Length: 368
Image 1: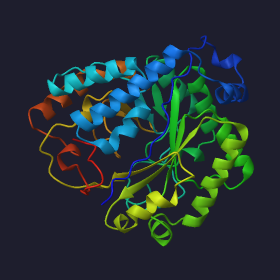
Image 2 (image 1 turned 60 degrees about the vertical axis):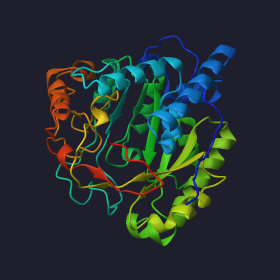
Image 3 (image 1 turned 180 degrees about the vertical axis):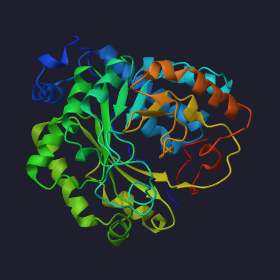
């Protein structure tokens, strides 16, 4: 099968801005600044270029996963970020109880969704109560953890259903934290919807497209032609207002979508900045420790439960609650150190013990 790879120009980090107090900043002003800001300086551009080149080399030669090069380049955008990633990787390789640095967080601002996708637990098997995270909880996460490089206001659920979604993005940007989101694309029915999203200051937005045409419609219960129309509407709005937000399209690779693999990449050419596939989570015996425990990221579920892994949809690996502690305290705290020891010793708790991913030559497994 031909290797699919979408290339894009190096992305520079935004210039450092003065610290501001959120209550003194209007969200629309923040969004406008995020849209219009241009990154000056040869050295900053050189730093970003060197970081991107290094990450691509690491993906191909060290990890032996060339298909994840683009994704890693998005998350690791400076030599400083590379230094932190190396520190976390060394901790993983040496199976240390402590890891180097917490750099990002997935914040499940809601576990509610307006679709019932066949492979997703949210509206099928999930036992957790549906809820919306209060804005004050989101704010506390960022206030208590000032070293975060980026935040994903998403885990299980559709983030744009949350009434404070745009307010949360604005607050993170006001604190100098990059924001990336994932959406099912259902909430962009008008030009006004698309323009508001384009202006809000997101670094990237990933739209889920599981297959092409009828395949996607059967899996997600949302007509693929409507999804495409909404994404095209957003692309036009983004270009019209001069937004820097990048568009990603992601497909879950599984038996029901693999026949659409080539068509998936072709269908979004000229619309998306990047197209990817990720393997379906499946059951299977774990035989090696998981990098997620050392990688530099944590997950906060909608009720405040902190878990080390995005696969943990029920919060079975709970490390504490954000109401009582900070992510920095949890990162090398007693519970996570014990979990790292368990993985080091080959004793995997649930759901780690039964975590595997769909196998296909075109995509690498993530949780190894």
